[in-house]
Length: 440
Image (cartoon, rainbow, N blue to C red):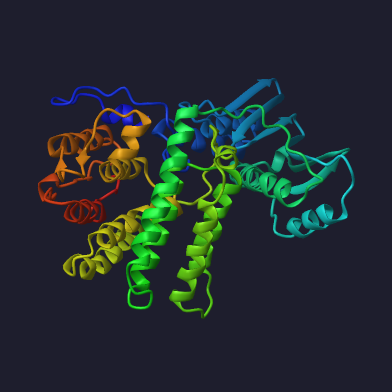
């Protein structure tokens, strides 16, 4: 969708028919004003004890019209709903007394004490929902009396139910051989070509990163090495968009670095490198299992004040200066990329920032987008040539598209440098850092 928008109205390059490729994690931090107003309606109607009307407004707020991720039907005081969250479908119903929601995790043909012990332990960490067993079907459930089903309670209760189920179904089936995958018929296939490209570039990016690390001193460059490894996580997450076990493996690699312990960075880097080697050793057939299309309703990360994003970008750019000035361009460009990529991975960003980030990524990885079938190349690394006017036009398009919601946004394209990738990344991310995302 973002690339279709980028392709419109290009004076020099012409419109781009973008392939149907999904990037990055879903964010629900981009509701249009009409949707936000429906949340207010739901809240007011609930306070007026018009519970059915409140549910109408709530599920309309929840629905992402571009994805059609929510189905909702009501007849009088009774109704049903279902919505998608990755590999899972949450189904529910309600009447004038009670609202119930349920999601199937897996099949358990034979009773298993280890599985039940795992679920019992995880139950203690749930606030709104709970694990349940229905015959041979493992599931999660949430329910509420209609009189207490406020929009806030429904949002956080259904979010916990959906996001935990989406994560746990793959992990449970992976950890316990007695369990069987079920209720996944809604998942969409991606083309064989796209899978091949993603496998090829996953291997390529891991090799490039590990080769660059092998060429420097592990102690002296420990900070730069950590930046390269973490940037690799966020690059794979955004560009490959893995699901299931592969996504969980990436999260575990990042957890090695961010775990609060006393271990030196050199040791953490060593362990992350070993995990990436294991990731590279995954067979093509195994990797393909975790590449599919899915719809989402809830973001798995939370919004943050824009100052948090600006601070991340600023800190990374300060740390890249030594690498730039001492002729380590790969380290320098990856550190600049880290500042915004970390935010795209860790936070639910305003869509205007994600669109600018997507443009930034397209400049940095033109061969990957070309292999996927994209026609417009914003940068030619062999010739070190930028399509500077196309980049500027795309930035202006994005700003114009979001000017009603972000009228103070002012990306100063005149400050961009197009002499090399390091300076481009530095100046582009600096402009991101300085953006004003206040409404007015």
